[in-house]
Image (cartoon, rainbow, N blue to C red; front, side, top):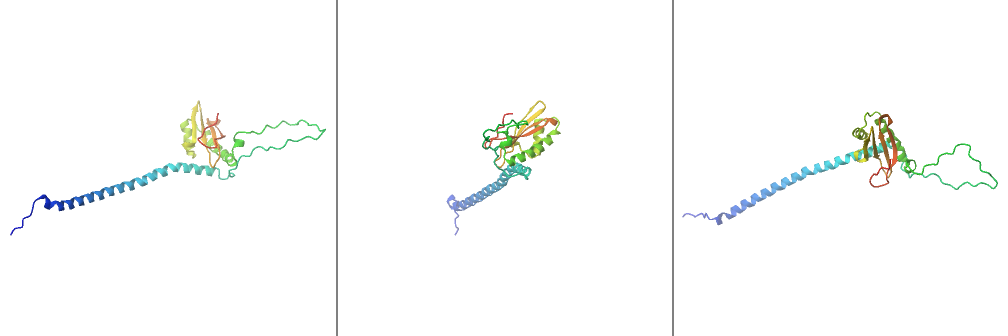
Length: 210
């Protein structure tokens, strides 16, 4: 007696269903593996970009700390002493001073608006920048920027770098630890001048009027 094997689609459907499910499972596993591999590849790269971006700022902060290493700690600037006016005893006569009158102490500017740490560090920043710019022939903005970068001053802190004739002017924002220090410089070979200035206490850097 022969057993008839049905060739209808109904008899083969369970086998096809199992095969279809197996193929779908393998496809899902393959896609999951690819997604995981892509995520793993993207993760370290993103971290690397973030680390590379933070590196110049960290080096700049370290440079500021080294320059001000032996300077006194930050303290509020001291105002000129103010005391009661001297009174003359009855019958006494005020005699004019025999020597020239001393100039009145400034009430604004780096001398009175910068704290002790900023003033000390500012002198050192002036010297290290001026020393490099004195020997610079043809001080173009590009050359001045390159020297400032080599000394550790990042582009984010260099402002208004522009040339006028044979002189290139610039500002450097050195605000750190609540200070207000900045530098106002003019690169002109042996006529180079770098001086301290006072930056805003907070917010974006806006150089003072020259």
